[in-house]
View 1 (cartoon, rainbow, N blue to C red):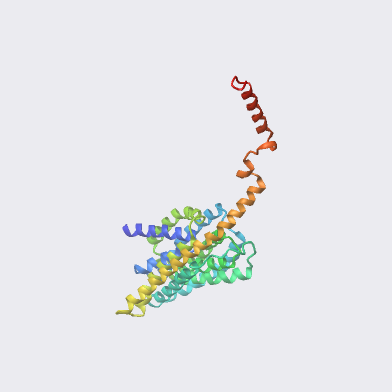
View 2 (view 1 turned 135 degrees about the horizontal axis):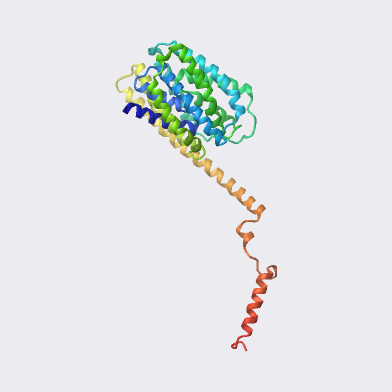
Length: 339
């Protein structure tokens, strides 16, 4: 029972991260399952089955918050489904001993990519253009294949590529990728069902991950508007790198003093990425401040609602004030002291 509660908590946290970044539900969940000893194919199959429910809930929530570009969803989902089905079929045919380091290597690489990607400012200077189908189709195909073979990867491949293009607002990139993942997760689950049968799915694990994800999905769609993606992305990337480095080091049979040295170097790299992410976030906010101030000043001048516009004028330009002064003068003149 305690294990299922922990898995539900993992599903909740993973969905909060995924809904805020547009990635990392599969990476986070699959990494944990590998750490506790679940076979790679069973881990990926269980995570993708749970994702059918969580991505459906996330897609509905993002749609209600206006975070979905349906043109992007329709052009990336079908190629992603084809890639996911092929990846699931391939992973199902590989032995556990061969698949464990392969899957850990994919997750490690994607985690390192998150560190590098979110240590730099997110580009939004070309928002407003159109994303072409010849770009979205191959992107979906590759992202779906990596997602199924690595236990996660749809978001880490698709989301940064769309962000770098600069054609969509970050919140719409995240919402569209999360919504399209429902189709990808469904196709991957069908592939695992054909390759592994029903025994390939760990149903208690699926239910626990699903419950946690369903609870978090509506909140995550709201958090995408307020959570700094820079810090969250760098933090999640470091956790994924360190967790999967353990599997890779064991597979390479690296013992002795080399193991702690490698862990220390990875931890130092994580800390460096976090510092760069903080600096990038501060620079982005400083750059936005003058723009926001100029926009506010222009709006105030155009509407006449600022403090200068509302202040009363003096002298002849303000006849009401002049009348008040005249009435005061007459009153004073009429007093005994004045006479």
